[in-house]
Image (cartoon, rainbow, N blue to C red; front, side):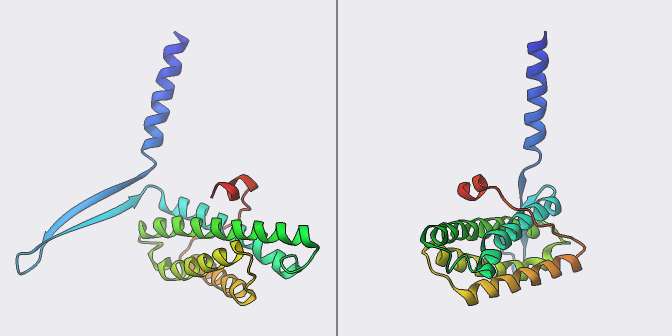
Length: 179
């Protein structure tokens, strides 16, 4: 009897978790000339919660592994081994932050409340993509790091104005390596 209960519980959990994903809605409309237009919209369950999670991880990765080491001089000095290790971590963090911002951008598209954050998130995504690629290649772009930090602040301020507070979370080394 306990085995059946365990299987029933597992089935309920699987069904419950599958409802937390995203769904796609397709609608068809006709314009005045009679031409049919089909629109597909991706909607995410709990977009605000997921947005806060992804943006918090992106901001935390950027500040903890890129901006603070840059300000401390660890990306440009500190012995060959320490310097290279800091640059590699910064490169991984840049790519991780870019990935998390892309996920936050998808969440913002699914929410009327968060839709006003599309412009700052897109700008941040562009800056992080360029920065992550440079850092991964071993190049330290001081202006790019400062510009990304400014865009993080702009995005954070826009989020607060929209009524959504982003709390930074530092990702683990496993999260950084896993992308």
